[in-house]
Image 1 (cartoon, rainbow over the protein chains, first blue to last red):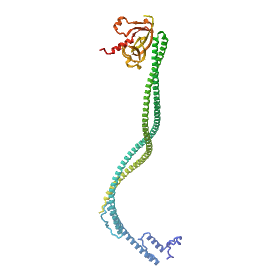
Image 2: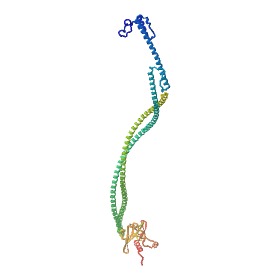
Image 3: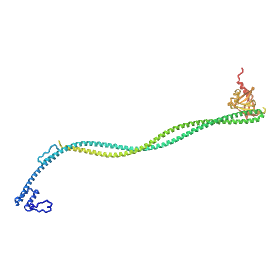
Image 4: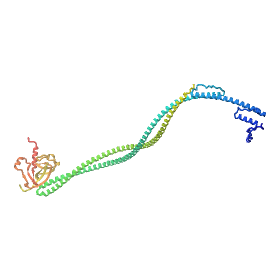
Length: 413
Length: 130
């Protein structure tokens, strides 16, 4: 046969050779087979027309194969139509069940075919799976609805809290701004206090020096008063001594005056002879009277000196008392100034510490203000996000409700 | 009245100035040195203030001292400057202590008889005879 037929050989060694169409009965047979291959199963060969018996037998067998294939095709087509109908029914029934939402029943087909069994089983599994899904979706929708309601409540609460927090943070920020200004003012005031304390300390030290000078002056006044007292005592003694001497002189002058008077008396008694004697006596008397006048003046002066000395003594005693009192007052003042100095020193130190603390406070407050501004910005963003979350939660709740409503449409029990 | 000069002693009692004859005066003394029983403190001339000087006279052989404030000194005046009291005045006064008036530097002043003055004072102070 290989010598008769030039069939397509897929051998690679023969591929390049050009096909040579058979002719004659073989050609007819090939053409017939080609038609069968192309699906013309109803074509038949007239086997009786073949002279070659072998080819005739082939033609008969080819006809039988074609008939057999046509019958198989027909049977297959019928079966396909049957299965297609069953599938259509199954799909229609499934679609109808899905559309109606009733998943409680089972799939029953009018067509029975073994080939549909897996389909029916698959559809049943799909239905069961759908039931399961619907149940799960229902539960999930219920949970989602509950959760979304909770989320919405929480989001609403969160939004409210965030708003309150933002308001509080805003107020806190404003307060911190005021605190910042106050801290700045406090720092400046503390610096001013420290400066004033320094000046006061300097002034108090100057006052301490002045009090020391005053105490020294009081000491000098007291010493001078004692010296003046001694000088007055000496002067008083000398004045008393002068008074005594003047008394003696006065007594002598008085006696001289008396003597001159008697001399003049005797001269007058002597008449002309005693005239010269009387003149001398008169002169003596005049001198004595001059002396007495002088001693009188001296006595007056001594009296004045005594009064002045007494006044000076009283003044000196007053000076001593004043100096002692001044020393006492100066001591008290010194003690007070020492206390004041100590207090001012402590105040100055405290003011310096306060100044440093307020500077640190100002820096810290500025940092807090900066942080609060950042927190406020973040809170603002959180507030916006919270609003969005609330909106999303609200939308989610609506979706959950929609989902629940959708799922309610499916009857699974 | 002779032309002889009259020798007088001028003295002061309180604010008044008097004159007395030198011849009647024994001496001028200091009151502090004279015993109190010899002193004549109050007299018709008045009461002296300072009582520093005493004009010593003799009275019945005993010395008496008229206490005065000051003895101004001796003066010699013409005899005609000494005038006795008019008779009528002497009769009215009835005291022998005032001997007359004397012009000293044209100022009239009483001329006192101190011994009579002292006598009258002593007599008046003595107890009356039984």
